[in-house]
Amino acid sequence: MSQDTSTDVVVVGAGPAGMTAASCLAQSGVRVLVLDEHMAPGGQVYRSVEKVTDKRSADLNVLGSHYRNGSKLVERLHSSGAQYWPGTSVWEISAAGEPTLAVGVVRDGRVRLIQAGHIILATGAMERPTPFPGWTLPGVMTVGAAQTLLKSSGLVPDGRIAVAGSGPLLYLYVSQLIKAGKKPQVILDTRPRASLQAKLSVLAALTVDPASMFRGLGWMREVRREVRVRERVHRLRAGGVEKLSSISYESCDRQFTDDVDLLLVHDGVIPNTWLAMSAGCRHHWHVQQRCWVPTITGAGQTSRQSVSVVGDAASIMGADASVLHGEAVASEVIACLEGKQQNAVGNAAHPFLVRQQRLLRRCLDQFYPPAQEFELPPDDETIVCRCEEVTAGQIRQVATLGCVGPNQGKAFTRCGMGPCMGRKCGVTVSRLIAEHHGLGMDEVGHYRIRPPVKPITVAQLAELEIDTDAHTA
Amino acid sequence: MFRRRERVSDPVTIWFCDRAIEAAADDSVAAALLAAGIACFGRRPVSAAPRAPFCMIGNCFDCLVEIDGETNLQACLVPVRGGMRIRPYPGYEPGNDIKMSEL
Image (cartoon, rainbow over all chains, first blue to last red; front, side):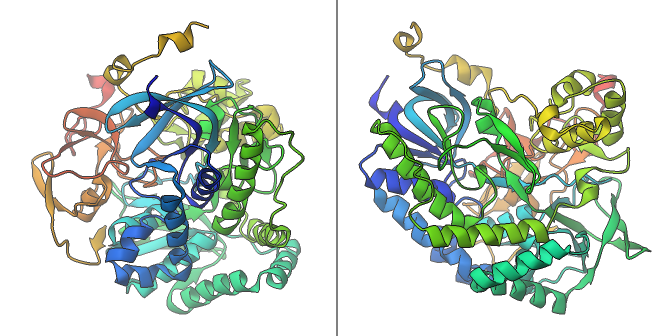
């Protein structure tokens, strides 16, 4: 196999965790190749940060000071010596020749296999699925999607906008919109009344990290001054024929209907585990964050010897903690490559910062729990699997017939078998089945994810050059 | 649904069916189509229900389109290129309610 298709470490993803891990490794003399699905480094949080900094100063002011921090991480990546491939999707991680891994990628329409001694998955987070009646209509999209359009192309919503759900990103984005001169008509806050535990966690976070907390409280104060917020929203529905035209909901026991052109929803983020799952890494249900996470020992070692995970892909930790985690995982991988025994490297480098980030995250997890109606859609007609248009009622029906897991559910309903491979329904389908049978999430399990996890054509596969020597063993 | 904050300085032309669309050279296909007011990127094979981008980061696959004859491409991940010809997923014209069961 030619030189350019083998490397010591492959890093998948170029957000704060992936950029930091790759920079640390390259600066220690390890050969690193960073594979990024997007066209420039930054991940989602620092999406397009180089372009915005260089060419769009008006947008830079709108996006705020925290966004600017991304430039330093990008500069460090570029000067580290790590090789960076933009526009590259990973469709398979094969362990047929472990400890050497074969990483299947598609780049510029060409498929190839890269051999690596170790892989670090820095695949980041994705927004938690928020199923409700009408959420598949054009005109309904996530808050993260709208923010991506602002960062990558300087787009702001037009017409009448409603924003629904909860979480820090929702308030950050609306505060950015206000700076850009656009006010939503209404915010529909689906958060339940804060528990005593949540209030105490706010106090704890204020003590350890007042700067971050005041930044977040600042967004909320600004937003609430400018935009009407409906509290304790239930029974959200989106209506329209070919696209969204109205929404209806209940707030504090009153019924509302609004005409809107765009509805942005958000209910926090969960790790993007699809590559780790397809690579055969063990996962378990994270009770506090209510999502699947890879099972980790040390800093980022998965159940598979040559596979590590870092940042939000490991569990939701946020951009700043992801940088710290990137450093820790890089040290662990270096020790592993050198064949040294691991003595719980952990996050030993910055114990105070790590503790600070952990308390901040606990506060956010408790203050913004996922809305119960998004987790377990009460209306049977709600589409759960967007691709195959399978409803919550159909999942409940097959559970009644005795279906005890999401993989069995596929055979009955095709849920999770469309192009997204269950990314947008996996958590919901497992939750519905677990709820029906009164089982724990780890008993019910998650979809089995098989490669290719990104679309490739038969022609691309046929053109793949296979090193036959490596596969005869 | 969306408008640009600033005018595009050096636009490239792409095509959605027979409609010419001006895009910024560094737009993704999805951003360019949304900025041009395209509300339906394609229809689901099950019910022919219309779809548009939902997540914009490569996970939902609701932005799938056909580009220059290659099907099932994620419009949010593909950068625009002048002259690109885009058709809706999975090849139906917008507004045409063909159902798989009728084929």
